Amino acid sequence: MNGRALLAWNLRRLRGERGVSQERLAADSGIDRAHVSDLEREQSNASVDLLDRLAAALDVGIVEFFAVPGEGAVRPDVLPKGRKSQKA
Image (cartoon, rainbow, N blue to C red; front, top):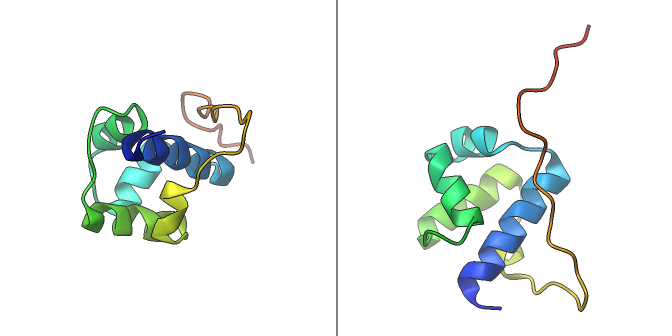
């Protein structure tokens, strides 16, 4: 797996584990939501500065973006689309 694929895999994994939407992650890291989507789909490259901001927003070390998935690991699911309901 190349670096771009590792970043995409782990960005999606970390975001999913924390229940953070692309929109929320983009706002917290100061980038456009479409750029987060492009990163997760391996359509864009990220600078080290951007990786630092994403890592800070996800409260992880930058090294987490390059963790190699174990043998037989299943690609992380995306979060359900739409906003969460505002139940009282």
